[in-house]
Length: 129
Image (tube, rainbow, N blue to C red; front, side, top):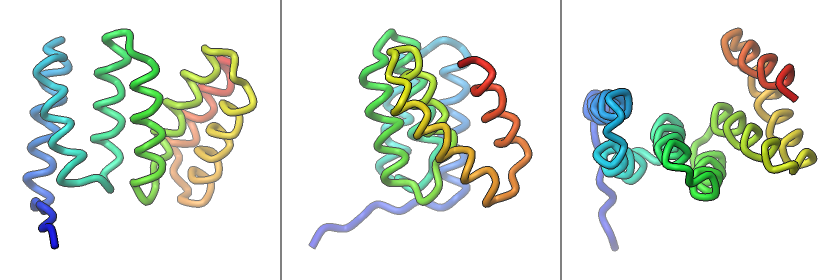
């Protein structure tokens, strides 16, 4: 039996803040292991998947980012922002059917959770297409 490493919400927030700061300072290579650690100890937290994917997108690795966003949607209980990120990459690749499905899922979650900010993000992505 393997033990799963669990961290307190404060520790997870600290990891995210550290990684985000490194990312904002364009220290992508240093941010990546921080976000990797975050997805290992808190796979249900969409922020880790989204941030790690963004790091890889910044490095021109959209295929890796797309896989990470997909994993985030599969592992996190609710991952609408990962769906939006997937849609953006899929639209850029001309994979419109898959992109529309991701956008529709994000929209469904926004309506279900009555999340006004998420609704606005979905609307912005729809206008881009």
